[in-house]
Amino acid sequence: MSIIKAPVSIIADHLALVKPSPTIAVNTLASELTRAGQSIISLGAGEPDFDTPDPIKESAILAIQQGKTKYTPTAGIPELRDAICRKFKRENGIDYEINEVMVSCGGKQVLYNALSATLNPQEEVIIPAPFWPTHYDIPVLCRGVPVVIPCSKDLNYKISPEQLDKAITPATKWFILNSPSNPSGAAYSASELNELADVLLKDDNKHVLILSDDIYEHIVYDNFKFTTLVAVAPQLKERTLILNGLSKAYSMTGWRVGYCAGPKNLIKAMTKIQSQSTTSTSTISQWAGITALDGEQQFIHDRNATFKARRDKIVNTLNGIPGISCSTPQGAFYVYPSCAGLIGHSTPNGKVLANDSDVATYFLEEASVAVVPGVAFGLEPHFRISYAISQDLLDKACNAIEQACLKLT
Image 1: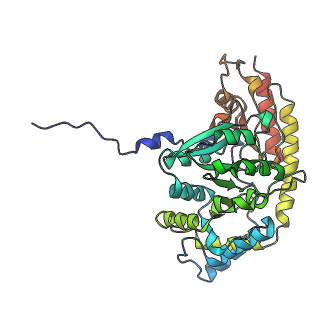
Image 2: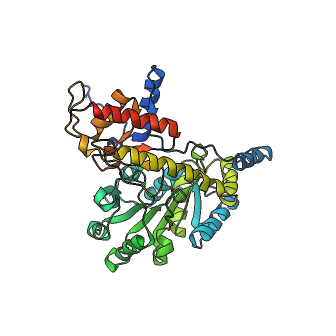
Image 3: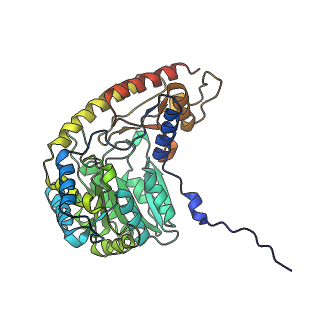
């Protein structure tokens, strides 16, 4: 007599807890509607609309011509790692040795390597909300437990020392800090970082590791002075991993160059993880990365001036739309307006907007504008707009959103 066995899923159970990237999903939907003939303005992109600077591209071409196309050490070519050490010394006042830094295929791999190498099942990761979705999903993928701390508009979308202290438990393994923030653009001052450091330096909290996501370090406005946690609290250096990369400031999203600096034993463990996944970042991208870090930097300031002009106009415009309230971000290239004033209103076809996902869908259908709903970032009811597109398209999008809001009853 044969025994019929129940079908077994080939997919790991915990993968069901991991959501696809919402920004990629928005861009994909917008592309599909565009191919179907609908003209969509997508405000979901998380990448600058500027091109990679020519000197960086030229160094990549030279690397190809010189035959620099073979495998590299997993942690990155020594020349790039030396350039990263120089960058931290020059810009942040922090000394790192070459074996305290590594290069990965973008910031996501840095995060994945770090948490894969350190998280045991059910250990906790404190994540202030609103958060970059990957900050939430990778801990889940690594069998950890995300502990989300809501940081409302009243808190300027930043975690307070009291919130952090209350959230830490014996099970806490990591605290993730993103400044300037994706999606809110909020950035922590030196004094605010000092207050958080005081909490982390308490005897009861010395088991907590810190991941400082500094990817938007160079995109700041209004004379805001960026500083990183280790710079204001050197005592935390041996517990802190600084994540950074070339994607945002250098318009190198497709080059896939992320990097990090941290304790030697952690970097060694992360290198072991990477050696069994991607091996290393593209050799050509790494040689180009040296030019990015060591080369002329004025273009960053010039581009920031363009971003700031866009930011100022979109914040002013959004605050003039009934039902929408928008704070002024200090960095990055996103705004994160509240749409609380739209919830409960009805669309022309009679649908009641119950949450920010409904609002985003309404904007897509009625205004042909794609935004990312706040639910993706852990704090509702909001939506995220990227202003890393032309001013003309931003103006058209905001006008369409305004007209759609005026049709609500």
